[in-house]
Each structure stands twice: as structure tokens, then as C-alpha cells.
Image 1 (cartoon, protein in one colour):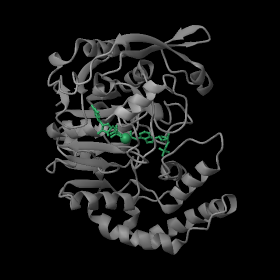
Image 2: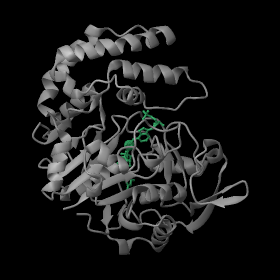
Image 3: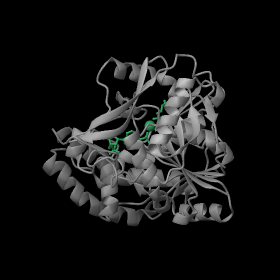
Image 4: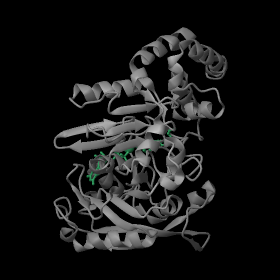
Length: 430
Ligand code: GDP
Ligand code: IMO
Ligand code: MG
């Protein structure tokens, strides 16, 4: 009955994986529609922790269908490794419950090499990418020299396309970066292995999603990254190469736009960012270090320490406006417990003027000064054990209410710990 998107409102790592895993209980299908294995989505169920990069976060509910849509860029080696690791842990993953779009583009070894070479060569212009070849793979898709998973079915065709692409890539790798060229046979050996194992998973994923929608099933769309990493609407150029916003659900999954019924915005109770780029509420002091330590803010994908800071409602507001977010899912509230005072940036000051939006110019965004509202803290232990909204400390409720008021959305869910059950669900999502 409901097609629901889960969207990161900040710079990623808001806890999308946890919330998708939880809400998947009520869904029939869970669909990834953009990004690639730059994503790292962590699920904690009992004593078990799962870090997923490509497989949708509904996979622990074995009777649900998980779909990787055409808007995702897929590194086949990573996907197969992830499937194998899940199966080794007793999770059922097979072409019966995991379907992959034949139109999804393939991340090839030269994409990773180019990503890494550019980053290591760049001095001031470094983006701080995950080094997974995401940008170069999306570039090839746009410049029409990419290879799609469905191309693996016809290895002669795959060979001719790969040979054409390699002409250019090897010029760059060898000529510009002084790296050894990538051989066609090396690519074809990999392709033959991938074809063997991946062919049974490939399908017309858009049609699968459309049929589920026509049959009035509940479909959950799992965003990766966050709106400030959106290539159109984020802090360009310090962004990823896809659109993590809700608009990409239609394109990347093949769902008619009017059939997306609701958008839930994932908000971490503070802000974190991995990689380079401006971050107005960043805390480079003891409080920032405390948040990083308590929140275990180290990347799921690269292990890098995440930069941490106060909650930025201007950033969340931008996502609410862009994506039509009605409900917020606020995560990691427990991490703030014990801090004597909490702050939310409700606006910025730029050249003596108060503004309520994220300026398009990166130069301006680097100069804004947050306008904070201060809140009383709450004690450690009071939040993590809270089973329902009423039992949350008064100060925590005030903090959440101020966020909702400032961004113009309502509370849908509050997460107070990494485990699936450490969640206060305030609304019916399906
Ligand atoms: P995603 O990329 O948006 O799925 O988020 P990540 O999985 O990269 O990062 C979120 C991290 O916080 C993971 O390690 C989660 O297990 C953890 N987490 C999620 N919700 C909560 C919460 O409410 N409290 C705490 N303490 N940890 C949480
Ligand atoms: P999830 O889905 C946080 C960041 C990188 C870098 C920029 C570009 O787990 O929230 P890329 O490799 O995409 O070209 O890197 O985007 N980035 C993420 N940051 N969470 C993610 O995903 C991210 N995916 C990419 O750190 O700054
Ligand atoms: Mg993550």
C-alpha cells in the first residue's frame, strides 16, 4: 500500500541501515536506488553486527525481496563477497530474495585506480572519496562508455566495449598518473567469473518494483549517503557522484514519481562528516572528541574518523524542503547523554545577515557562522533504556521538539541505541 523512502538528511551515516532493517519488518520489498559500495550501513541484531555496502538492509528478513536498482553502481567482486559473507553467517541470500538490475553499471578495476590516483595526486582539491571508484563509474555512465551488468551475458559484446573504454583509461593511467596499464584479458577473466555467479540474480528490476507497486505491496527505498552529498543539491564539489535525495528514487529504481507516497528523513542527533568540505557546526574540541568516542564515529567503509559537531537544523531543513520529508527518524540520541549543554544551529549568519538556508556558493558556506539555540543536557542512562517516548527525559523531548519545529517536520521515530530493539516508534510507517 505504501512506497516509502528513507533518506539521509546530513552528510551520510545517519543510521539509515538500522532504520531500514527495523522498518523492513512491515515491507514486502527493500530497494537500493543510488550510490554503490561507498555506502556502509550497519545493522545490529542481538549480539550480531552486519556491515552492508551493496546488499539492501532488508536482507536479514529472509522472506522479503531485496533489489539493487539500475541507479546503483555495482562492484561485482564486492557484491559477491558480501553475499558470501552473509551466507557464511547463516543468512539466506539467493536469487530468490536478492534481485539485481541488469541495467546497473559495473565498477571496473580502472575506476578504482583512477579514483585513488586522482585523490593521491590532488593537493588542495582532494575530495576525500572512499576510493571505491564511484565517481569514475558514474562518469563513464554519463559519457556513455560504461558497462552494465546485463552486458556480462554477452562476453563478446562486453569485450568490445571494455576494449574501447580501456584505450582511453590506459592513456590516463599510464600517461597522466604513471601507473601500469590495465590489460583487457585481466578484465575478461574477471568478467567471466562474475557472469557465472551473477547471471542468476540479474533481472528487469524496474519492472519488479513497478509490479510490486501495482500490486499494492509495501516497498521501502533505502537511500545511501545524504542530501549534503548530493551531486546537484549538496556542498559541491565535496559530494558524491549520485543523487541521494528522494528525487532519485523514481530514476534509480524505475518507480513512477507520483507513486512515492512518503519520505522519512534520517537525522543523527548531532552532525558528522567524513572526507573534506565545509562543516559549519564542526567541533574541533573536547566535546567533538567525546561525541566521536561515545558515538563510535569511525567509517563503516573506510574506518576513517568522522568529523563531529552540533546538530545543524539548516542542513536538515534543506533536506526536508528538497525531499518533501514529513517524518523524521532521529538516531543516536543516547550519544548526547551526559553533555551538560546541547546546541542546535537554527540559522546562519553571513556578512551580518541571518539566513535560514545553505548557500549555494561553497565560499559563502565556508564563511557562515551558526546561530545556535542552547538546550539543557540529559543524564547518561536516562535515554538508552527508554522504552517509550513518555519515559524519555524532559530535556531530550525539548531538544527533539525544537529540531522538528525548526525544520518543519514531525517526529516519526527515535533511536536510542544501535540494536534493532533500541528504538521508539511513534508513527505507523506502513
Ligand atoms: P548509515 O550509513 O546511515 O546506515 O549509518 P552507519 O551504519 O554508517 O553509521 C551509523 C552507526 O551508528 C552504526 O554503527 C550504527 O550501528 C550506529 N547506530 C545507529 N543508531 C544508533 C543509535 O540510536 N545509537 C547508537 N549509539 N548507535 C546507533
Ligand atoms: P552512507 O550510505 C558518509 C563521502 C566520502 C567523500 C564523498 C565522495 O554510509 O551514509 P565517493 O567515494 O562517494 O566519491 O566520496 O562522499 N561519502 C560518504 N560519507 N557516508 C556515506 O555513505 C558516504 N558515501 C560517500 O567520504 O567525502
Ligand atoms: Mg554509513
